[in-house]
Length: 94
Image 1 (spheres, rainbow, N blue to C red):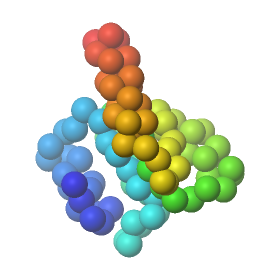
Image 2: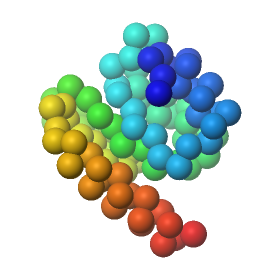
Image 3: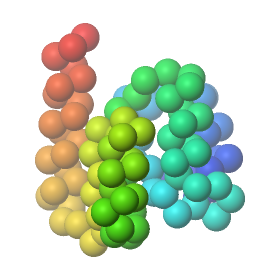
Image 4: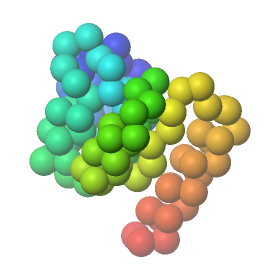
């Protein structure tokens, strides 16, 4: 878990996660920029979690290549099912 974009990017590089849950509203950088920087380094499934409900934001996130875009509030079961589906799909590719 990270509370800022810079902290999240540092952990992304050092821990190399299998999947990233990314909030768009970070105090030091917009989540879309964090997304771009992560994808410049390597592909990792990214699920965007946000309170931004504008249709244009959802489209922009999906066009960037987000594997899923969940709008807050969402059910924990929905998040767990989404993560499982994405990781299962990723494992079948490997």
